[in-house]
Length: 355
Image 1: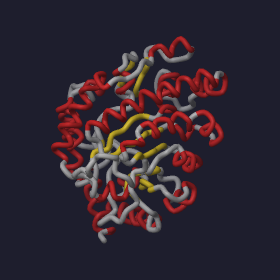
Image 2 (image 1 turned 120 degrees about the vertical axis):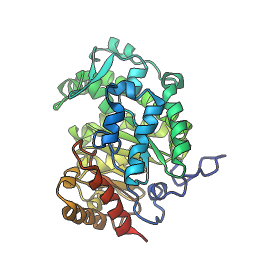
Image 3 (image 1 turned 90 degrees about the horizontal axis):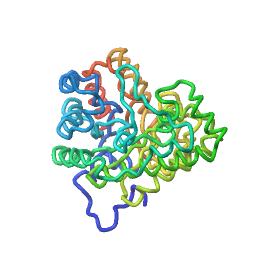
Image 4 (image 1 turned 45 degrees about the horizontal axis):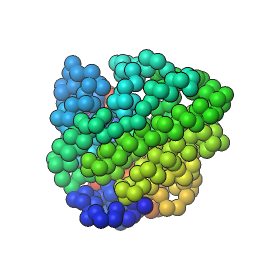
């Protein structure tokens, strides 16, 4: 089922006619909708205040805190969608993988997956494992009203990279060594991660998320042939697993200009584009039938209002011929970004694109 159809037996929700969901469905919109990856986070002083002294993973498991953090950028910036505050490794932690998010480093896995026996760490995810997600989304949808909530998860390749490397990597030598050297083990690892990821997204949708985004943050490290053979099947399995809900499915990666067509082929309704490829060119690569999301360079926000507005107009002009466009940055909000610059950017996009 595509995002243009309502799920059988379900009435449109309060969010159905929002500008964000209309754009995802490639329908006419009153203005170009805006939201930002990492809009809830370290760029906001109110976020730093409520997170003070609480470790990252613990903060993702406290429904009232998650609700407050998710709502903060909606209140401050007037964005057209909220994104659920969590982390891509939350479902792995929930099934018992021994990992932690270390400040200044990122996710660190105690026992990296290097052999077939190590796959035993990855059991199925059940809704009971992440009951705090269901509770938080219930609280959020009650507060958000007509503003859509985006659920999200890490894509199988990016999760596999963390699990095999044992933490962040710039070269992915261990992950790629498994992918090239033991393709059967690699395929089984990604297939298991696809099942866990799909289960995590289903929990979010069933709790009330209006759309979902799959973050394949590190897919840009792959050549197209390797992506098609060794990664696309697992991502496609995730998208297919949630297709029946009829909610828009967004696919995003960094440095994925050469993979845009394949990422759309995996099953997304909306393809996220980083700042390296203009949106009109991205549309040519992706092909018809998909909305696009993006793609202002996050560093532009440090350049002053005049420069931000000029670069924003470039993005909007590049998007002028698209079937559907959701304005976003080409990656996440950087921690030292001035929050007021984001608020001004939302207002500028809304004003400049008002129809």
